[in-house]
Length: 185
Image 1: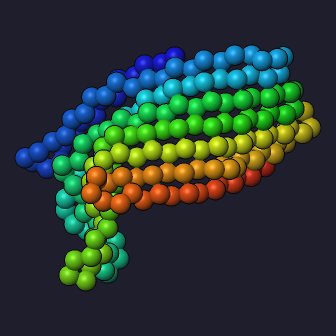
Image 2 (image 1 turned 180 degrees about the vertical axis):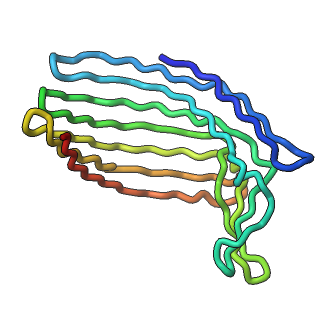
Image 3 (image 1 turned 30 degrees about the vertical axis):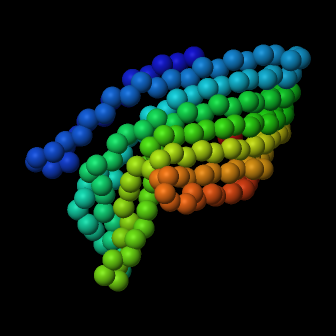
C-alpha cells in the first residue's frame, strides 16, 4: 500500500504559470495459493500532469508542413487501474498471467487538424478513456542465474478514447511481444 502527493509548478511565460497538486496511491492484496503460486489484486490511482511542451501554445515546425502547438488550457487528470495477477515461480523460472482494466476521466489526447495546408498537432482534454488487457510474462534463468531469457506478450490490449459525447470513439487494439536475453558478468 502506498500514498503519494505529486506537486508540479512552473512558469509558461512572464504572465502565466501552472500548478498542480494530486494525491495518488495504490493498494495490493496478495494471496499464496500454494508453495510456488500466488494470486494478487492491485488498485492504482496515478496522476498525469501536462508538461511544458503540452502547455506552450507557441507553434513550431516539426517538418515543413507539420506544426506542433501546445494548449495552455489543459488540465491534469487521474487514471485508475485494477489488475489481477497469477504468479508461478520456481528457483530458475518465473511466469505471470495478468489481466486488467483502467480508465481516465478528462485524459489528454493528441489531436490533428489541417489548416491552410499544414498538419497541426495539438492537445485537448477528452471526455474519458478506458483500456482492457491480458498479458503473459515468462523468465527462465540459466547457468546459476548468469543468463536469462524473458518473454513478454500482450495477448489482448484494447484501448478506447472518447473525445466528447458528440464525437466518435477511437478504439485501438494492439498486440505487443518483447523478448530479452540478459547476461550478467
